[in-house]
Image (cartoon, rainbow, N blue to C red; front, side, top):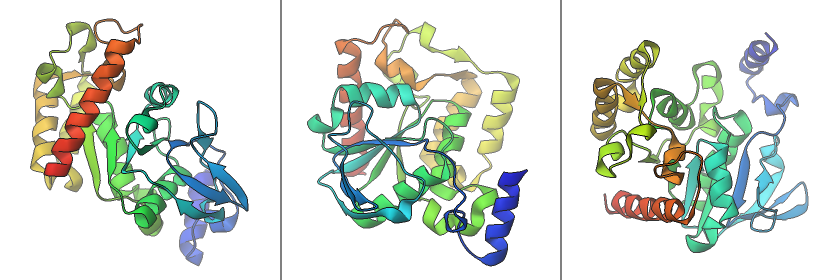
Length: 255
């Protein structure tokens, strides 16, 4: 397993994987109110097309980061990211939108960590209302076990979980077709997560996970874009997303 070998070599010589000049191909995307220079080239992420800019594997080549964003919106799914990017969501609400298209890669985690360190703005996260969405969030916040040697540059500990939360299903009266039955494996994963430190130290998150495991129901993030019809994305659903984000952002800040 070459991936494991790279981790072992980096650990032995005390460096990061990028220092070995062996990196994965581009995966993460960023769009919105941020500008920087990448290896000397000026990049404005409000002018990189609808899909935004691919996050480069060599984060150390990024410099002169500037932004007037008030927060970073971290989105688990590429489909949700694209919908927000297409609507130029960052013009209505000054933010930077980032996705790693599911399980986060090293470059996206390192990029997010550097942004929060330099810009000193909050990170708000949207993931699926299932155990795997929370596991993805945990990787951003506390890192993965096999790369614990480089956790300082790969983690962003203070991420606010906006949603989608299990309690949102009833709170916003989301239709039955949006609610999916958990498998035995899903339930097992949820129960294991309840024992994790990043969940246990947050009573609110523990309560949400308990609701999920007890109800044996989960939901995908895409439901906030399609009220009543999983195939349709319209202005009504977009208004719901914007209202949802505004309310949850205010609640988060007030707390």
